[in-house]
Amino acid sequence: MLAIGSPTISERTSTSCNALLRELQQIWNDIGESEADKDRMLLELERECLEVYRRKVEEAANAKARLNQFVAAKEAELATLMAALGELNVHLVTQTEKKLPSLKEKLASVTPMVEDLRTKKEERMKQFADIKAQIEKISGEISGYNNLNNSMMSSLTLDEQDLSLRKLNEYQTHLRTLQKEKSDRLRKVFDYVNEVHSLCGVLGLDFGKTVSDVHPSLHGANQEQSTNISNSTLEGLEQAIIKLKLERKARIQKLKDIVASLFELWNLMDSPKEEKNTFSRITFILASSESEIVEPGVLSTGMIEQASAEVERLTKLKASRMKELVMKRRSELEEICKITHIEPDTSTAAEKSNALIDSGLVDPSELLANIEAQIVKAKEEAMSRKEVMDRIDRWLSACEEENWLEEYNQDSNRYSAGRGAHINLKRAERARVTVSKIPAMVDNLINKTLAWEDEKRMSFLHDGVRLVSILQDYKLARQQREEEKRRYRDQKKLQDLLLTEKEAMYGSKPSPRKANSFRKPNGYRANGNGSMTPTPRRNSVGGATPELLTPRSYSGRQNGYFKEMRRLSTAPLNFVAISKEDTMSFASVCDSEPGSPPQC
Image 1: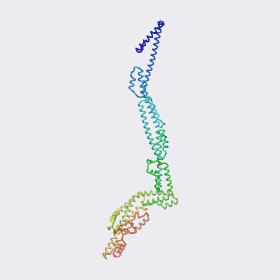
Image 2 (image 1 turned 180 degrees about the vertical axis):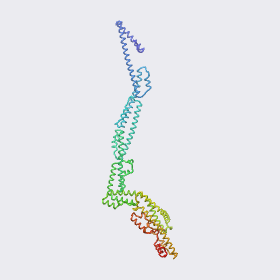
Image 3 (image 1 turned 90 degrees about the vertical axis):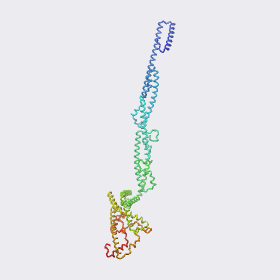
């Protein structure tokens, strides 16, 4: 038999076998076994030993094969884990590829690495699961848990064969993208909700009900459900905002109409300030844009109903005071027409309007509206006539200065050294400059009036008379006055000449003019030191200095205008005051002088 194992074990086994064999032979000798039986039994013994060795060898071979297979499985698992985790540890690879003396040593070196990679895999899978759960949750919030993107979710299916850091980074990147989108959507939802809150406050609507109709999670009282940020929620909020803005626009327009009616009624009824202050919250909207109206409840139905009720109350009150209002507005119309020298419409005259209202033939509201339209028309016409009216005022002012200057020139004491004489001298100088501009002023006024008439295609009437006719008559009267002045100067020269000749023939005698030199002239008053200060007056046509025809002289009556024109054409126009005594002495001279000229 061959010895197996180390020399010590073989020697010990061989020694034991030899001792047992000698002991067996001794037993056989004592028994008396034959040599053939001894050989036969020794052969059987040897065969049994071989069988035991063979069985042990087979068991050892099987154990080696299993161990080898186990090591191979570990190495395969190691390779799979390394591939799944995307790790390539050079140290581990070196250890696995290193030629180790036995399978157990190789197994002992691979097993810790596999266990370590298993732990890493479990941790990695947990990371993937957490990220995937967050992605699914946010995706569900964005999509409303109704229409999840199947392609997106299939791409997120966890693949245990690919747990690399690259794949983990992809999941994390996708998660960050979704988190940013969620943040943007949340901010957008909050902005929409704030806008809805502001609009509901202005309109006086229930904010909670409004947002709950879009989604229950939007109401602050609902803490059990996170804020919904799905597309349907955003679209619902957008539609709610559009609807609220349209409602706000409609209410603003309605309230503006009501406020306009309030202002009109307040002005008509002369409402007190305290009554107007009751609606101070809404009166400002007439001059405000939609974005400026932010006061809570200012557009509520209650506020609109309150304002409407006030309009209705004032309307009823207006109906009871309509006659008074008609008369008041007619007076305003007549005042406007008086200021602008326009003839008011006679269809709404006070007496006629009063009679129509009493008879019940005309609705007072319609009559009032007609008068209002006439007031608007009168104001518009006044604006268009303003430039011409300003020129008329300057012309009339110049005529007043001319009248004053004529009275001043008739004052024999105007050059005295009395108090105020220098002031009158300065005024006379300014008046002469102004009077010198009157002809050009009238011509310019005529041209401006004709241009206005061409533009408006209507006559420019001043108190019912065409202004151009008044100006032309004024020019004619002025020319006649200048002619009378010239004739008077000629008569004065002739009178002086005759007096000189008479004095030369019969000797001088006291002149009636000197005797009356201390008489106070008509239209003047004496001041404190005896000097005479002129006072403005209006002379009649029959007086010493007749008044020229101006728009003021017509007094708004065309008949008076024609009467004045007839009187102007027949009355003598003398422009220097001649005393009665001077006239009588002048006549006596003419009568007593046999060779006097016949024109005297």
